[in-house]
Length: 390
Image 1: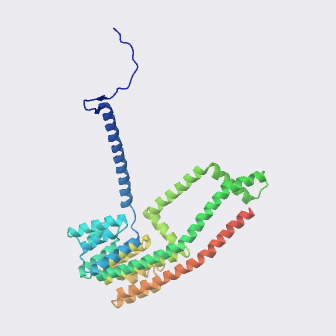
Image 2: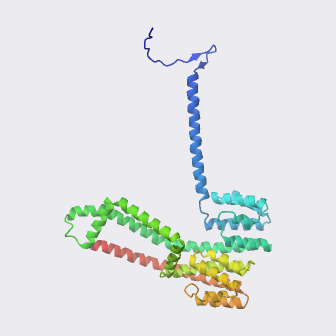
């Protein structure tokens, strides 16, 4: 016998003797939804935590943050607090999340019996080799407090120079960006409206035709232009990071008027300052020269300094080696190094050289700051004049 089709009806919840609703299906569905929601929330939270952790571990610890860290460490060590406990105190004081992790790892290393320099070297390039070697020399000689104080002084000088350079370069960069944005606005919005007024492009001057062509290209082929800019930028970055490309680019920068001279003075100042400090801290001259070569951040100077260190092992003096390339090392610098080598006072002489080039850098920064404004005004005037003439 065939049963008739009955309309589907919702299953009504049943009650027990105490009047409690028993709806197992409803409870199962709600429990499943709750588990799914909690899993999704946990999954999303886990991804965000991983992304946040990755960003923290790949963030850059700026020189200013390192300066503050060393200043606080010097103060705490001067109070007689052990290194491990000092690091734990600084970990709580530090606001930078990456630096907080670094200090925590350094504290664990100290507790396991490592030296402060060893824990610094284990922090994935956070501290450069010159800094680690200086700290190691202070620990070896038992003068860690004095060495750390001098290290803070060096960081303050480097930080001051960096701030001055950034201050000089910020203004022209902002002006250039604003000019580019203004040019894009003109090409996208102003030129098309002017073309509706002029109508026939053939009767227009050549500069105006060029601007109209650029406007059409920007309107209709902007994606190709964007891909072209990204492609050229990527290729240039790849080439510049290759060993041969880095050498060619550095040579070009060093030979560029005004900027090349500024780069030379900065490299010499940093190298001589650190080299002098390493010698005063008890680091052997050859090792100190090799360590100081990494501070220059300039592949040309680094190669020359490493060559000088190798020649020094064969008895060739530093001044004699530097005298071969007056483009990198001025005659005055070579003469002062020669005097320091002959009088066995190389460390103090290098310190005076570094002071001299610090003053030269300050003068160069002031000169560049004064020259930037009229140069930018002239460029803007030429741009406005060209636009008006077109």
